Image 1: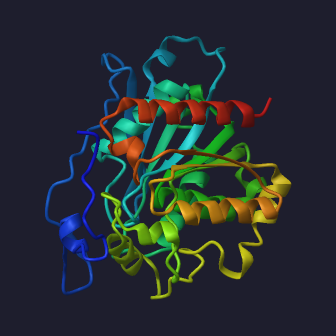
Image 2: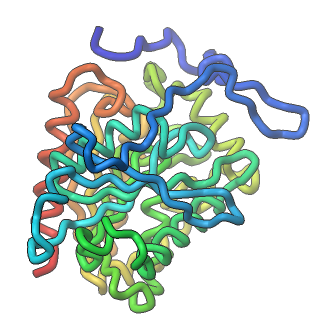
Length: 333
């Protein structure tokens, strides 16, 4: 087995059955099958190569972050160089998963050890109970929390806040993009946290007009009807030409000019088997037209979420090489 099996026609797929969701009378949804979670492992005596701990973020919103630290860092002296920090947002179409979900826990632990970085994964509020821009608000809360956090020993002793990257997968890539736009206009206020770049991993965008890659309609993870439902449940209004969904609206955000002036770099990664690739290529072209330095890496074949959901370790390993090179080339100093 190399991954999920593609449906015969993704237009006809029942999205609620595909996601195992039940729509409640009040407009919320219930997950009918349990999504596997992984507990944090903060104990330094743990044999795990990566330690993790959960820290409250905003108690009024009942959200939190999970911090991933390579275990070997605890053996280094305080004078050792600190590690780059990745602020990460998980995928799930804004409506599923959490920072504790096993697929994303394992992904974050893997990039922490492979890239030699600290990862802070945000457990943001989900739609439809909390529609966009709630997740974007949580992203900014996380950036402001990182700026002021001095109580946590791992971050205080091992994280180089002046070497921060905002990253997300799928819907998390959408969140990373919008968090970057928001952060660009308050960058000075975030110091000593300094953002060096954005990493958009198979970012989730859409629009009212179908693209050619969307019309192929054979993705095993993101059939077209599933994508439609995710936008229906997450957007504040029923309009796929909303800026949260379609970054091309009105020629793109004016805040990209600020990202250009700040010298942030943007990495967009994906594969040509992803139904969202046309959206991703449009985004790259638009950012480049506005003078933003963009790098891109697209693999052959695959499907949405292939580096996380595939049982082929080579996929995740190849992604880690791309991420490591980008961080090294974008880091300050």
